[in-house]
Structures are given as C-alpha cells and as structure tokens.
Length: 115
Length: 189
Image 1: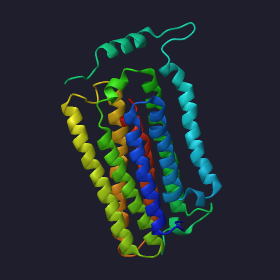
Image 2: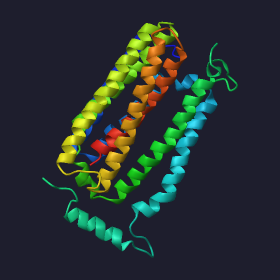
Image 3: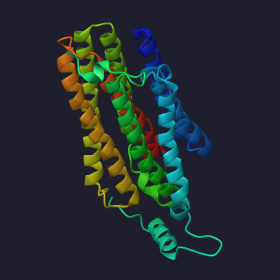
Image 4: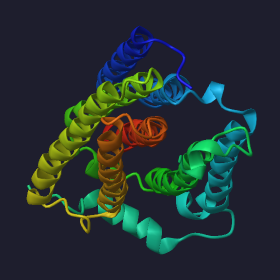
C-alpha cells in the first residue's frame, strides 16, 4: 500500500513535530481562541496527516473510509443524545440542584489539593 | 501454504487488513465514546480546570513526540517490508517497540508523581477520566508492542511480511488516539 519513499515519510514526521511544538507553545499565551486553534485545530491536522500518509487511507476503497465515518457518526449521536443531561445543570423548567451545589463546593474546595 | 487471511480478498481488501480496519472502527467507537463523555463532563464542570492544571504538558508533549517517532519507524518498517527487506522491517519494528517502552516509562514517572501528590483516580471526576483514558490507551500501547514483537520475529526471517503493515495500522491508530488525548488532558485548562 505504501507508495511513497522514505524521504516522504520523514518529511511528514518533521511537519508533525513542528505542529506538536505549536500545540504546546500556542496555549501558553492563555488566549482561549488561540488555545482552541493551536491545541485542538492542530490535533485535527496531525491526525489527518497520520491517517493520510502513514495509514494510507486514500489508497483504501471508499467504503472503508465510510465505515470509519460511520463509527464517528455513532459517537456524535451518543454525544448529542447525552450531552444536554450532562453539560446543563438547569433549564427552562428544571434545575439539578445537587450538581449545581457540587460544582460550587468543588470550586471553593478543590477535591485533591493535597499540596 | 499461506493463511487464508493473506490470499482471500472478497471485498477488494485482503481479509487480514480488513480485520485490522474492523478492529480500528470498533476502537473508534470505544475511544470516541470515552472522549465524548470526557468533553461533555469537562464543559459541564468548570471546576475540573483547577484539577487539569496539575497535569504536566511538557511530559505529555514529550510522549506525543515519542509516539509520533515510533509511528515513523512503523511506516518505514512497512516500506521496507513492501520492498521485501524483512530484516530491516524487523529492526524498525524493534525501534517502534522501543518507542512504546519509552512512552510507558515516561507515563509511569508522571503517574507516580501525581499519585504521590494525592491526585489519585478517586481524587475527582477529572482524575477518574485522566487515569481511565490514559490507562486504556496505555493498555493498547502494550498490546501493540506484544503484537509487534511476534510480527518482527517472523519478519526477520522474511515470513508473513504483510503483517508488518497490519500491525503498523494499529500502531498509527494508537498514535492518533494520543494526538487527541494530549490536548484534552494536558492543554485544556
């Protein structure tokens, strides 16, 4: 399956290394948007490069890629099905008082600050 | 005689490789579910930021570097196997295993320091996810290293060279999982 030469793979590894440095240094600025781009945006690019050049996904039949996308789609169904209950602690006609209290208490007394 | 997984190709993909892809798809659901659950809890619990601030991004970054480099060795092993050079493929798989070993050593130092500081798996929701996700990932690293050792043993004799690609595919996937775990557990604070 691998049709590229060694130099090509080493080039991709060098790009991945530069991207890794960006993903470590970028968030140090502590700017939320920059963190999102440098940490999570760069992670997507790194994963794409590994999948394309090291796993050779473009050389596989299309249905195999679709199979992988299907696996990810199942995760999205799970996420959007469960997230409203987990992420929200209050809504139009309800509130999860225990969760709200838990978050407030944890903010005041970090659970594992044993230093 | 070659095993049927090497020669049979009912789907246009050799059956052995198809089996690895099938495994990877099931792993996508496993790790995707875990990471999805982590993301929704993390967004619903702002207090986790304080706990996350105690992780060590430089060690996490170093481990990312180690895994990316081991992935390079795995793809170069695949390249060598395709050229019929089993000895070189086995040697490169040995480097990949060494990368996996280094990853585990760095992880064990990191975990020891965290546990000694009181950040155990029961210290809070963040730490539960941290140890579960990184632990399941580490078990995959160990499984990959064992599989690779068997493949390298045969490859050194010029046998079953197609398996070098199969085990490499699995290793790259383990690398991709870490690429997402790294920012989620170490960078987002």
